[in-house]
Image 1: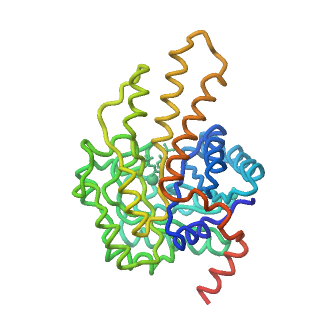
Image 2 (image 1 turned 120 degrees about the horizontal axis):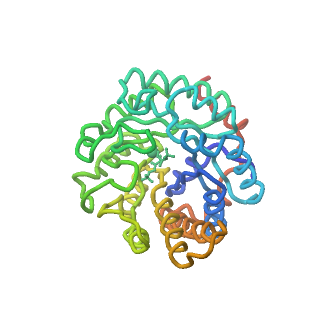
Image 3 (image 1 turned 30 degrees about the vertical axis):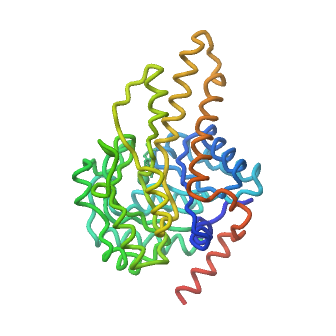
Length: 343
Ligand code: G3H
Ligand code: 13P
Ligand code: ZN
C-alpha cells in the first residue's frame, strides 16, 4: 500500500477506540522490525524520523527504505511522520521528501531548547498547517513542554520542572481552534529517554488527569503522548547483565497509556524501549561469542528484539487487527477534505 496520511489512521483509531504506536527509526533494521511486528499482528503503523534520524541516515536512504516497506507490505497502512520538526523549513523539507505527516513542535523555539511563547507557537503551527493541508499532509502540534533532552532536542527540564510546563486544558481548546492542527501532543509530566521517573510514577507526576480534562472539553481531539516508553525492567536487566550500567529508572506504565487511549490519545511515541531492546541484544551477542565479527550475527537478534517490543505495544495499544479496516485514502483525498473544511 502507498504511504497514507496519518490523519486517516488517527480518525480510524478514534472511531474504533484504539491507539497507534509511533516508532522512531534511523536505519533499515528498525524499519524491518516494525514491519515484521505489523505483519504478525495485522497492525497499521506510524513510522517516524527525528531531525537527527534524517541527518544520520540521509533523507534519501530513509525515503527509499520506507517505499520498500510499503511495497513489501501491501496490506499494511503506513504513515511516515516527521518527529519534532523545529521549524516550518524542516516540515516543508520533510513534505518534499515524501513524509505524509509532520510535527511542527512550536512548543520550543527553533533551537529546539527554549520554551516558546504562545504567539510563536500559534504562528509557526498555522504556517505549517496551511502548507501541509494544501498537500493533504497531516500536522501534529505541541502545547506545553516535555522534560529531558534527547540528541540536542528538549528544554532539559527536570522531572520536577516539567510539572510547571504541563499543557493547560483550557488553552488546548483555543490552540487547536486557532491553528487547525490534526493532532495535539500534550505535556503531562513525561520526558524523552530512559530517565523519566525516579520511582514508579503516581498520578502526582504522571498527570493523566490533564488528558482526561482535555478529552472532556474536546472529545474529537486526537491527542499524542510523547516520551511514552515504558522502560521495562527486563530490558534494563539484559543490558546490565551483559556489561551495561543503566541505573534504576522508571517509564510510563502501559496501563496508564491504555487509560490515555480510553481518553482520546491516538498516537503514542516510543523510541527508548526499542533502543533498550536493540542494545541488550547486541551486548548479549557480543558476550556470547567474542570471536564472531559478522554484523549480521548481532544485528539479527537486535532486529528480532525490537520486533518483540513493537508487537507487544501494538497489541497493548489495540491497533493489532486493524490494518484492513483503515480507509485507503490518499494525500489527494485529504486535500479535498481540508478544502471542504476551509470553504
Ligand atoms: O524525540 C525523541 C526521539 O526519541 C528521537 O530521538 O532525536 O535522538 O533521534 P533522536
Ligand atoms: P521515548 O524516549 O519515551 O521513547 O519517547 C520518544 C518520543 O517521544 C519521540 O518523539
Ligand atoms: Zn517526542
